[in-house]
Amino acid sequence: MQRRQATQVLLGMTWAGAWKAHAQPVDAESDAFWALLREGGVIVLMRHAQTVSGTGDPPGFRLDRCNTQRNLSAAGRAQATRIGQAFRAAQVGVDEVRTSAWCRCVDTADLAFGRHRVWAPINSFFQQGDQERQTAEALQSLRSHPKTATWCW
Image: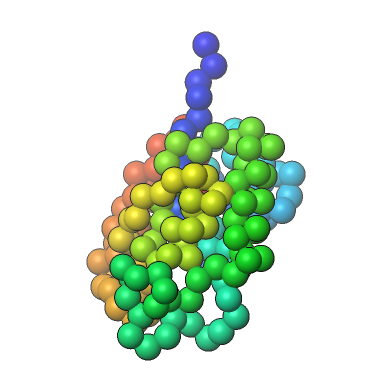
């Protein structure tokens, strides 16, 4: 009986690629990336898709109101859709999708994978948040990563 690899996606980080524990990063545009995902025991970090150009979230933005944030552009929505298509074409199943609370990350997850779960440790702590606590919680999750699971963060 073939074991099904569990995959999680986590959106909100600032670097895209994959690595195994104690290994070097693997570029997301290489054939080795997809082969590594199919093998399992991998963590993938992914940033949200392209946004409307600008410098960042406007003053007074609110996480519960997308119209107050910097959001995906039309190109970003298309890009997120292509991300999901690439995972499906490579036959990489996704069991869980984690994202920060920012609408651009949630929208990227939904467009690519059709679902998401907001996970506070990957929320930005640039303007708000608790860097020490969030980092510790994210690192703990990395340390407890099952050797047979593929997580995309």
